[in-house]
Image (cartoon, rainbow, N blue to C red):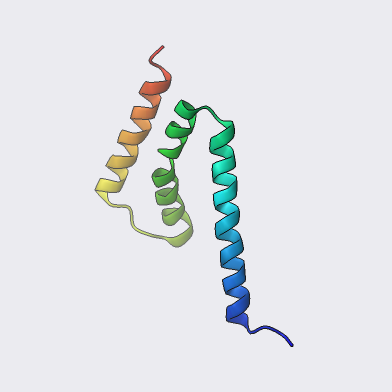
Length: 81
């Protein structure tokens, strides 16, 4: 008996969600805390870029300004030595 398509979609979603969480926490466990906190700040910037490139979403002024502030803050953290 074959499963209907929505069930396969649900199974795929659950596997991807748990897989993403597993790899996320495994990466955080292996990277020092200061580096992982800085990398996690890049998540909204990456989501904005992927939404713009892949989904053709419009970029607002606030989105671009926020990304620039995050990136400049990360740059200042890495060059403070």
